[in-house]
Image (cartoon, rainbow, N blue to C red; front, side):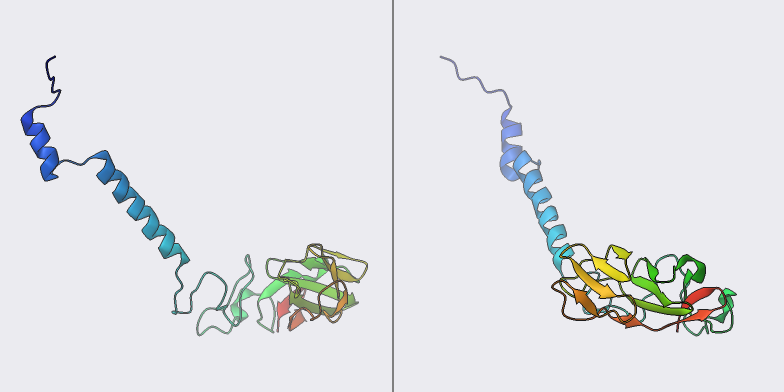
Amino acid sequence: MTDVQPRTDAEIQQDRTGSTSTRRVVLMGAGGLGMAAALGACSTDSSGTNPNGTDFNNNPVPAGSQGTEAGSTGAGNGSGSAGGTVLVAASKVAVGGGVILDDLVVTQPSEGTFKAFSKLCTHQGCPVSKIQGGQIKCTCHNSDFSIETGAPTAGPAQKPLTETPVTLDGDNVVMA
């Protein structure tokens, strides 16, 4: 039987010296890049801009609203004299109810009294999902919170929702 060699001696020698990429080399390189990307995504940064939520800004601005720029008084938004960040139009917050925003829950426990609380349940951090019967409700584990104080009224939550001071500025509820 005759030994048939489909490649030339020059091609075989080139493979031995490594000047041509083989599938194994290409796959190992791609795997290395994938691993580097995965490790980079899991790393933390001490610069104060950690996206995993461990170093929040002390005064977060809800999405869709105008925050104050460095050196600004915030009064340039045309919302009135207080100059706070507009959260929601007061007319959108029912008496005895509230609205759930991106980061906060704004309530009106009694006519003209507005409150704002963190949207995250103090039990296990689920976002609250509805306001019903004078209660802020977290349907993850059935915790209820007062729309007036943010204190837990039912369920496994033991701590109140974190309150954010707000005030009425013209027709808007704004951060105080």
